[in-house]
Image (cartoon, rainbow, N blue to C red; front, side):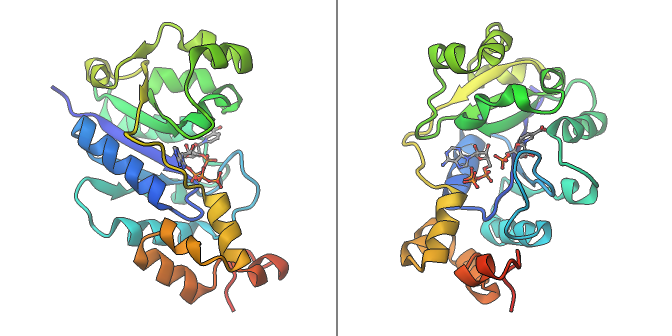
Amino acid sequence: MTPLVLCYGGTFDPVHTGHLAIARAVRDALHADVHLIPAADPPHKGPTHADAEQRARMLELAVDGEPGLIVDTRELRRAGPSYTVDTLRELRAELGPHAPIVWMVGGDSVFELDTWNRWRQLFELAHVLAIDRPGAPIDPAALAARAPAVHAELEHRWCLPAQLHALPAGGFAEFRLGAERPESSTELRRRIAAGDPRWREWVSPAVAAWIADHRLYTADAFTSGRPDGLV
Ligand SMILES: Nc1ncnc2c1ncn2[C@@H]1O[C@H](COP(=O)(O)OP(=O)(O)OP(=O)(O)O)[C@@H](O)[C@H]1O
Ligand SMILES: O=C(O)c1ccc[n+]([C@@H]2O[C@H](COP(=O)([O-])O)[C@@H](O)[C@H]2O)c1
């Protein structure tokens, strides 16, 4: 059986314990390495708070050489918006036509999939694996109501995660975590800026130390207009 290539793209501004829990759970359930791919210029987000190098550095610190988790900085080497379809084209060219490639997204992203650049091509290049997220259960009825084009596109693609091995691309599966993860980078940044000490619960100790050392996401960083928060 050809091993899956699991790709987990994100802004990771910063990477939190929810991202890591998701990467580990999918790695362990599907028995394949997870490639964490930080977006240099995330298409649906405004300017990031930490720059791309800083976000990639925090990912490296969070992963810390753990087997089965690989940081792939390919999007940092490309100019312009970090469109997923371009990343998948690169990967497909490298891996050949038969390798099953899986793009992981949070449930919230599924509802917006039809706003992604050349979104229907995503399924020609890869499978999509959607991870349940609080407030964004991947429910066909909710999809039909809120994102009818996505619902229609997915209708004949639904399968189980274990079936993604069978084809190189084109499937859509839902991945249920034992317990949904409450973390979000937005709330994490808000806690840091507000001086709420609970922010440390959502990052690894090494990432927490790096954020503190670089004074990232502090109220100063926001009010001074300096996105990196460095002094
Ligand atoms: N707690 C979570 N549960 C499920 N999916 C998540 C969770 N946090 C992030 N994701 C998913 O991981 C991917 C990368 O997330 P991202 O780096 O944008 O973090 P985020 O917490 O969603 O950030 P922000 O709050 O700034 O939107 C996205 O597909 C997102 O939906
Ligand atoms: O290709 C697109 O148009 C596109 C639109 C929105 C998000 N994405 C990708 O989805 C991943 C998660 O994005 P985000 O904004 O939730 O961090 C990240 O890899 C983004 O590059 C991609």
